[in-house]
Length: 410
Image (cartoon, rainbow, N blue to C red):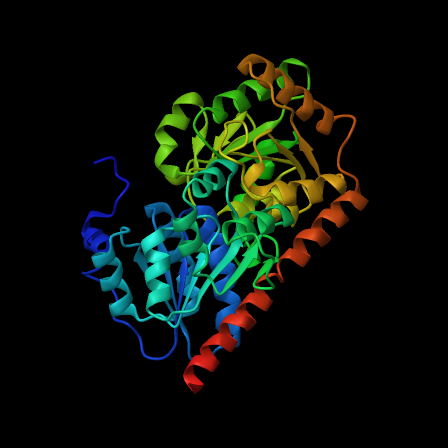
């Protein structure tokens, strides 16, 4: 009723009524919850398809937004990628899913650990891998309260590639506390160069509209953040340093609500242009972050002014823009800290009062615009770190392919 399901495909939630036939040959199943995880899925899918000429990728998602992103990416894979919505975590529905698709390997990305989905895949003798794996402190505490279930779920994984050492320790603890070579620190996979193409006409329009003003791209914003960001930009203008602000909400389904906060701004989804008379612009479409990052002087990463854990900074880091984030970054703490040591990111301190956070935001934007623009050396360091991260999917893809070859030889 809230528009968060694709009604014509609702049967997929109960493990039936599939859009696609199960293709012949090896099938590698990647599970990605939403938009962020779909980036990791695309990165790993690229590496897998380059290594195996006869495999097909099945990507499952929970959200409609992520499904749309996968559909766009699948166009370049020329029929070698299928999409399904994840079956709900009921044994009968999960078994239907596994019986129909018969995956040769199951890869769970990030932090979506459904007990029945994982343990039944293991019971079907399907190799299970957790990649780019992490747990929030809240989720870890919940799992620790149910040690038997945790042992069953996390013990089902043949390999766990965690995002940092802290997460490696967490997964080790959930599997009984004994270190194992099957749990390794590998970093995040949420960086996809192939998804970051820039539209020359769009970037030219945005640069012309900025008319010499620094461009502030507010990427993957959530409810409660846009208002603070627009207020901070207004403070900058009042101080004599106007910026051209582009808001790109994480979920375009919120576009109408965001547009109400910036009623004079053009909307990308309606092909409305930005002009030099505008202070802001609403990018309420998907798949255009490459264009936005390529024109940005400063990138603010959303999900961090509200307690959502932040979004991955690797993709904007590839473009060398100065990065700015709120205090809630626990989901990507390792990546932010690595870029912070390279002078590429400013992390705001936690300020409970909303007005104080707006003032702090404005102060940091002004600081980046005036006295501390990112240096060429810092830009190169952050780009090098992000570029190195682009190769993280390769050893995981090699392991998956080796598992499939081993299974075929048995």
